[in-house]
Amino acid sequence: MKVVMASDHAGLSLKEWLKALVTQLGHEAIDLGAHSEAPDDDYPDFALALGKAIVAGKAQRGLLLCGSGIGASVAANKIDGIRAGNCTDHYSAHQGVEHDNMNVLVLGGRIVGMAVAEEMVRAFLSAQFTGEPRHQRRLNKVMAIEKSHGR
Image (cartoon, rainbow, N blue to C red; front, side, top):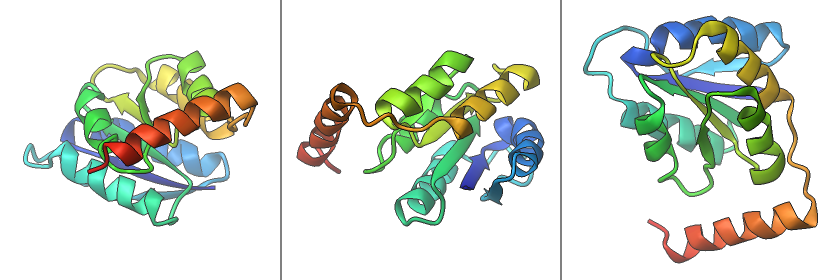
């Protein structure tokens, strides 16, 4: 699977560590930055680049990081077709894909430790949307909201 990755300065070190994990798991990691800890690397810019890459079909999933995960999650979810979840636990990382067809895992580089981040990335990348009628019905409702209140 192609996995696009991006972070601002606050998520950089965790992103770099996770990039090696993604590759080790047999996926292709596409790194969109940041590549320095300059504080003018703003999370909305990276969320937009990551979201555009997924919507354009350049990657199937994304890993997005900022300091808390909140700002990056908010920004990514403004992009039609992106379903980003700011997760802090294993269950949410896989359940978000299985039930909600989440395509971006957002992590707080200052919140989540490496062991928990590794566990979540493994769960996120191995999970598949179930397509069960109740999950599809809910996803269709989410997509209808996106269309009727689109940007």
